[in-house]
Length: 135
Image (cartoon, rainbow, N blue to C red):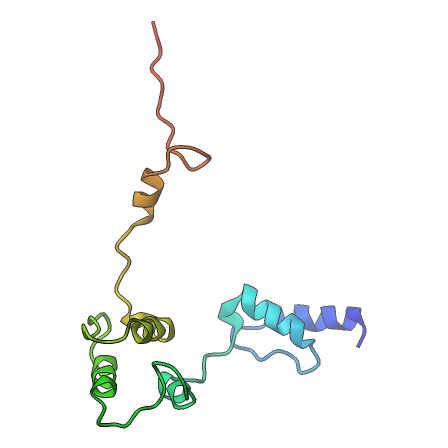
């Protein structure tokens, strides 16, 4: 398909409501680029953590027998309210993986942007200190 037709398809798709599927003839690279730049246009995730974990066969998240205390602790933690701290003895790699897959379980940030910018002393983001005028 020629580039003009691809451009027309892309423009038409971007003018539609969020959630509208891309045209089937639109180049896959263009669709993926739009999803990267405009994630609000991407379709909702159709996977859940259970589906992902079912396919893991090696490492700390690999399937273990249901009577394994580590598995029971993970299942219990995932069932708790978002923001609950992970069990103290849970493997750090497992905790990081859960936070990556379920950001709602991650603790809130402890540093505010103002704290970071307040510590900047040089460069374009440094707070300018007003100078005193001499009279």
